[in-house]
Image (tube, rainbow over the protein chains, first blue to last red):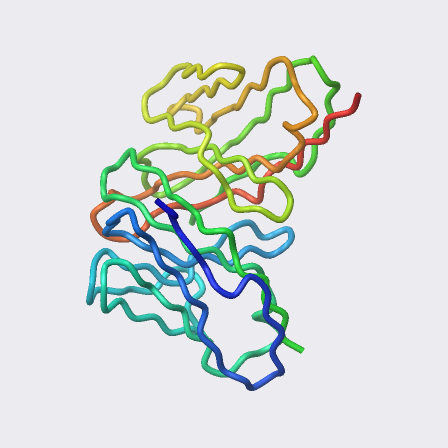
Length: 113
Length: 113
């Protein structure tokens, strides 16, 4: 199993550009999430999904959209990039049990100029 | 609100023991996780506690006191490869619904020879 994969690994955008961060998992996990990690802030939840066709907002959803058309894929769209969105983005997946841990992808390092 | 506190940075010596503390105040509690994160990499799962007491896994142990809102991660026989950030995270809601993981800001552990 490849686990959770993310592309690209690095990306530089100009303010106002849009782009999609890709995330895929091959573990048949129902739950998928997007986090961002900033220095001194810890991991913060952007959006999450509990199954195909179901998404909801996390702690910091503004400026991001998600969709979940299949169990495997959970892309994150930046609608109009801003410097405040410079961050490292992690996708994660898990099964729904209370004790089940998150499996994180390798991350995408995004810089917005 | 949700609040998780852990020290920003700690230094320890190779071969020694170190204890990383985590205190939390959350609206609900459905377990506490510890993750390890090496620089530039994704977090990886270390331990999970939902009942009071000590859970031991090789060189790593984790303790929980729900009445005190307190946990610690104990690392024994420290090795240079243990230099990493250690993230404390509380699942404050049941798994069926919101992702429900609130993360602390992480403790950067430096191991010296």
